[in-house]
Length: 249
Image 1 (tube, rainbow, N blue to C red):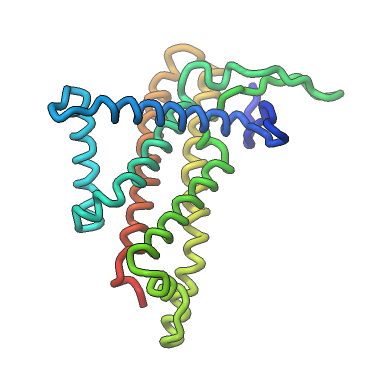
Image 2 (tube, one colour; image 1 turned 90 degrees about the horizontal axis):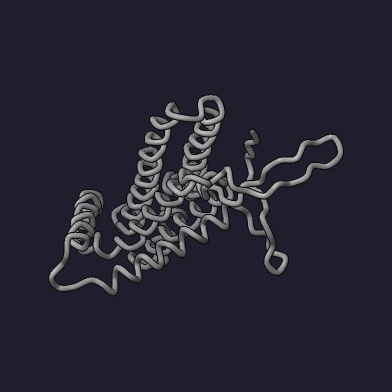
């Protein structure tokens, strides 16, 4: 049994290393893109049961966003990015739970004194710290871009840099530093929960390989969804703060 903290390289494209977590992330993006295009083309004015269920979920999501943003128009405006983050993170978490993800791999021959080990072809993207850091950076950058578009560049930057008085200057610098803290918090929270879940399932499956791992598997399905929801909701809260002029100094 081998547990690696970092993602392993599977192959390279034009000198660019493709790790098992990156490969899985590209598959998740591809699957979500295909499903979205097919679902969009099949939408009708008279919805069927599947479309009705999807519209109900969207309506529930909008209600949650309304409670944070306080405006249905703003909720509809920022719905695509929030739902995209939620679905991408959730399915990235769930992909690592599929049968074959982990056991299927390439045998890597060790150097002298080391044993051969199996390098998994697929790995849950969220179990790679590089992935979660990248996703956190995209989230925080998107929040600040949306803030600039909503209230203007100078008003948005005045939240971080202002000379009105020493207190506002100090608070603004703290808020600027907090943008980087958000990235660290986002990335390590998601990575820690997903990676710990993978390790737990691997150890339990190794010790008791049959019925016992099932409750832990269902727990990780729930945890994967909850972590995606938390990531999306925190992004939504930061969007609400960034697009509100009341929070500007």
